[in-house]
Image 1: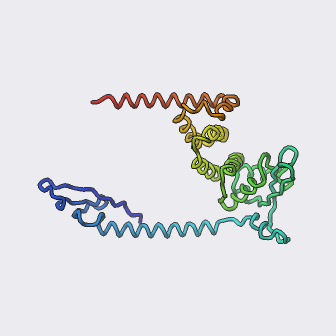
Image 2: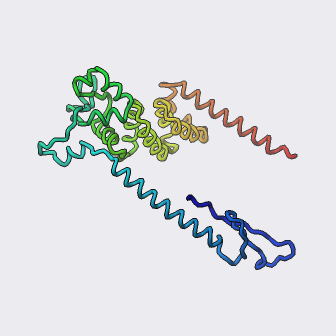
Length: 274
């Protein structure tokens, strides 16, 4: 049973002013005790301790379940058995490709996977592989405009729900996650990118978030921008945004004006005293 939170409130007696005469009350069980006693009553403290231990056991059990349900990744096999012919039982490969079939200056290395895993993780892969599409017949899925490293990390996440992120990788994976409707990965990358937001990258982050429907990232970046409007027009990124997507600039100014109106209204209401 989950325990209740124990906090204390001070109760001053009407006829005594000495600090020693003050009593405390446990907000959980409503019991009174003197100020010199512990901050919570013994029963509530013990219950809170029992709850903490129970939660620790639950966390341990959940971690064990996650480890049990974690898919074995064929990419792990590829590293371990790079020079052997041991089977990894994959039935599809993903290839990072551009219009000419190359990424950069060299052919992309195929990333092995299992159709069952792709189908279970992505509605897009599900539709692709369960119907008689080219990818289903050939066993090859070409992913455009993505690096091999990003594709490999994307596939590995589908198996393990883990990814080693930096800002570029988080952006690349968020794009893939949106394209293939892997919501958990998109939220994971967006949370990381929000943690890295600052004034220097706010304009580009706002444009990126707008393009890829990253709502939390968009709101956080927009808040940073509207808090620094006096510096906005001096930014190179702002000038580029005016030229490339003036609609976003209009939205920034609309958000700024809305914030100004709300601030003014709040000041007016605060100045009116009953």
